[in-house]
Amino acid sequence: MAKIRIFSTTQCPYCVTLKEFLKEHDVEFEDINVAEDKVAAEEMIKKSGQMGVPVVEIDGEIIVGFDKQKICEILKIK
Image (cartoon, rainbow, N blue to C red; front, side, top):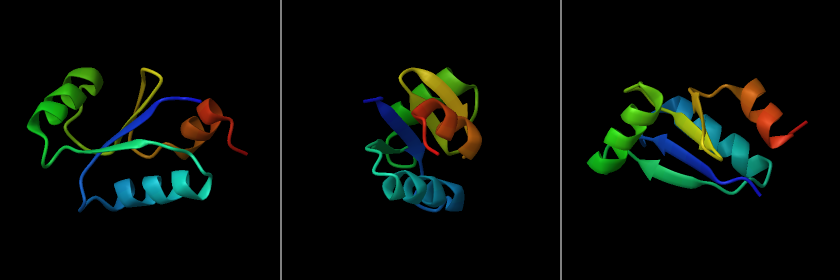
């Protein structure tokens, strides 16, 4: 099973949609609130080069934003 980490905030509508999508497909993930965890926010920026959320990390691969097509491709969701 892939290790999935989502760097997000509670106010981000794309983050909420992404997490709902993964739950609908029974995909487990770690949710990291970067508004509350400054160390995680710095990690996200270092890995992605982005300050915006969501940033998804799937087995070390970084996806910026809710790129549904890419996420489905990597996780083999139809």
